[in-house]
Length: 437
Image 1 (cartoon, rainbow, N blue to C red):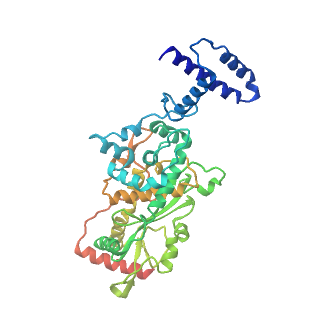
Image 2: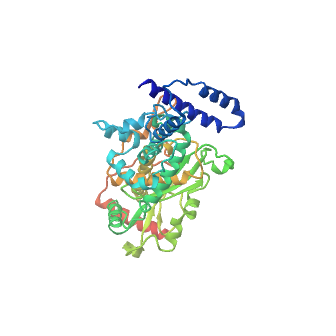
Image 3: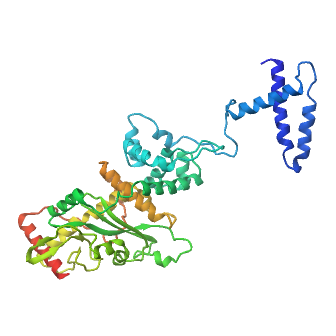
């Protein structure tokens, strides 16, 4: 660059500074005066250009800055620098990408891309003057990472290079987008899916059974501005109740969440839409099945003793002094109903945010749990296997133990073997239970 060109650029920059400083408030008057004196102190040799040339140079410099003609080496001082971390590792394409995706996001890259393509139209953000906005796949990856690992906002933002305000907004937006994009992912089985569900339960000795139902507790910190006793369960821990219906494939058919932990399972069922639909005949449709002794059933669910007696709910006999037939029926009923416990284990084991006690927003917690159930069904449909090691953790004492799934009456292991005679006895006992109700 020649001397004349350097002088022109210097004059243009000083002119720009002078114009900006003159437009400032009255408190910066002295600073503007010094800038003006500095501009007037420029040499007036023959190498300098006239005022018209300087004005043209100022316009050209401003145009170049507006068109990014001068690349910005560092971001503006008020913009937080974005780093790499987990997000940059997820974007790598190598042999370890699949395993890394399953470890961090609980899914394969293919499933993640499918979800990102579905949600991108709902998460695309407007480009502003400040900086390039976060891309939809970046937002989705962070939200899945938070649900999968259960890390706090402060820790998760460091590994994804986004600010705390941005990640709170990201979780909210992704939750709303998943609810809008997959409205029928959690639905009562119909058509071919219903036939598959009924056939699976019939193989276990329960004809025309539509699913298993149970409740789990989501442990939380004491909610602010709320009565703590309402959220205390029988273990004196703060929690929120979630009622879930699953099939033998562990697929979620219905979910109802949001009531405090002190609410009993019976009360949860009475408050849910499941109870209303069953009472109005909308839940169990199709041809009824005729069981022995003239018992006719349109459908029913398997549950434990915490639910009320109903013609569409079958629970075990219970008690200590049981007849061998009753004990055999309870054994088979608990074995089949164990699908709920396995579903809770897969759901909470994969999405560990809902496993330990955590601080949460009570307004968004129910929606986030429903969204996790949607992801649970997506992964089952995609054939993503579950790692049983996620059901184990190391306690403060260093002992490795199974995680607490929030079920106050865990199921005991039972034998899965059966015979033709046991199947007949089980059928007759099922009829007896339905007649008693």
